[in-house]
Image (cartoon, helix red, strand yellow):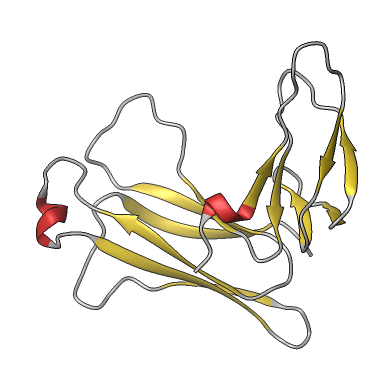
Length: 148
């Protein structure tokens, strides 16, 4: 399974720095914000501004995004699922009621999210809610393929 902690690379600056050298691990990496290819197993220079921290996502990265909320409520919110690269991938999204300890009794969902890539490079995303179950937190799911 792919998990966000293994999919992203963040490059912070330290006091007095205006740019920073970042070593990208093996694999193809993409800019989180634009989906632009940034490199593969090489050293790159990043020049962040005050409004944007450099974040990179590995090929096949699936990142679910929830809308910005000012308060937690019981409504179901839409999820944007961003996908980066050209490598097929599977991710599991967790959900529970967010209020009780019922997850300790098995009352939670693991929602498989899969992106397949055909021989022509066409991408198709699928969210599979387990049969007979419904989500507590998530409403509509939409895919945004960040790379062509």
